[in-house]
Length: 384
Length: 246
Image 1 (spheres, one colour):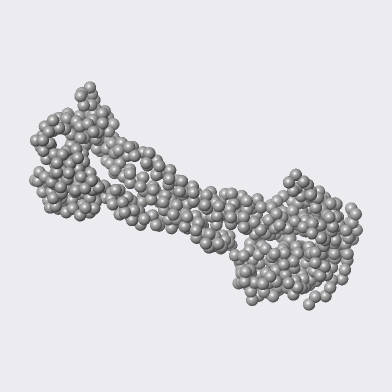
Image 2 (cartoon, rainbow over the protein chains, first blue to last red; image 1 turned 30 degrees about the horizontal axis):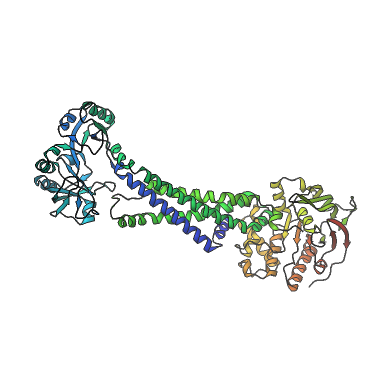
């Protein structure tokens, strides 16, 4: 029990220095946790994607649509259970800053997305109303939408102002479900477009393909694409997760930069802490020499340094970890719903703890070696 | 008693410390600086030696060599029949812990430990249980008249009191040898006298062998023998009647 006592008291010897070092660690661990959570949030859509769904789009680009009649041919592929239509609407609610996702979808769309839970009576109301729309819970909370509200959306791809009536709220099955979107009837979109620009009618953005067995996803994807090979609009079918990751990949460099910054923060605090430990060790050379003269070995002195470093890093790391969830919650509110899912994962917490341990160990290496190697005579400055 | 010879010992009984042709130099940059050359000296068990000499004479170096915290370049150094210059580092540390008590000029107490804990420190290297350690530490602290200061940190003690804690720490393992490097160098006259009296008592009453480095003639009066060094060479040894202390 002597060693822990000595370590703890040494750690509190320079209270200001220790407090500032701990503060540095708290900030670094907190920043690391938040930045990693931002990266996780980026991937949240892909993580939540089902592997029982495929997405078929135009092989050239997502901006090119597919003919409506493809739906029947996709349905004919072995292993396909159902096919839903989805068009990106890309409208603006009142002001361009009020941007959220709107999709025109076929009526069976929700059958493919069991993670969206809608009350049966609300779903029935939605089915009855041509202009009806379902609003995700997170979106409804952000804008204060409620059932019965009329939402005017100004189209950017499909010109004009479109009035939608909120007929129901989509709840998420769990915390990981993103409910920050609005869906409405694909038929309503298609009929309106047919009236204005007939050429753009009967075009589908993507087909969401439900499959019987997720293990056959790759084979079914190939089979679907083979159906349309050498056609005017060849398709690219992939799992929903791959489809989502394709979007994430567009931000790869930003994500990479965030990751790098999160590790740079850790490296910086490691250097700060190593400096603090080196200063402490340098100041205690005479004490180390005295302990050695009394018969304590190099291992004991190394343990003193490592122990002190670990105490400081673990206290800083623990406080940083404790502060991360509330800070994430605050961050989520502050950015106004840019990240629908912004939850600190267990992996992130584990990495925060690992970072604190690595910082504590790495910062102590050089001072511990110095302490272990101190020559008694030099340490005592007793050359007569 | 201490005897200096020109290469051979003339002591009759087996000395506690036996030094033969000891040499030591230090490397300062590219330069080799000789500190001790051809030192031969015997120190009998129960003696109280004052190593004297001007700054740079090598007295502290000789003390360090005898205490096993430095190694000679050549020569033989036996303490209690053990050639400590041949011991590997780990064994030498064990040997120091068991056989040498250190008293430093600036006390060298651990500032984060109380007087009690500082004295207990060397016992952490033994197998003594907590109760036995407590018994010993309290006894030794009472011996140096600090029974009522056990829970005080060094910063809460005067220089003389800190040095008494250091003496208690040096005594706690009941070592064969006590080495003191300028033990009164940082103290006022009253405290210095108090410390020297304590060392004399340890020597006279408990029979501890003490080797003390000092350049203060007043402090040296407490010792039984004086060994004079100059420019790394042994000039003379002097047997004397130690001065009376309070």
